[in-house]
Amino acid sequence: TQVILDDSISMIPGKKLSSYEQVKLIARVSRSGQAKPEPGDLQGTIDTVQTNVNQPLDLIIDKTIP
Image 1 (cartoon, rainbow, N blue to C red):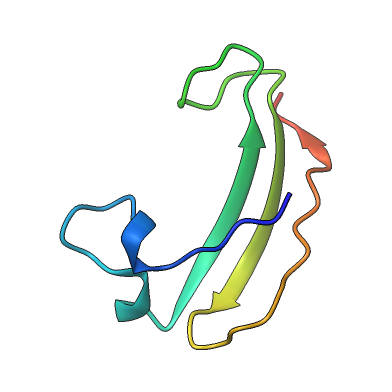
Image 2 (spheres, rainbow, N blue to C red):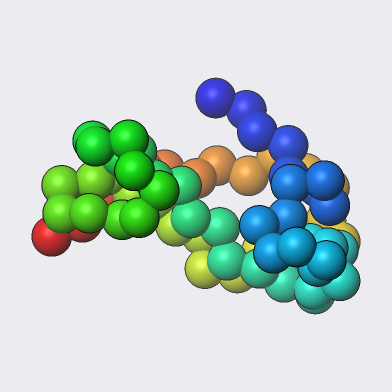
């Protein structure tokens, strides 16, 4: 799946993604459908992403939350 991240989808009201130099990306597949991470959910992370770079990134969901 391709997802485009920009200021319109910031999860913190009043804060723009572009106001940060770098962010941490986390993608999670929830077994229960809840937003809160739960045991058994699948997750992938990219620890440092520069927000001023406009290029595709590969985030692999390869971990299970214990």
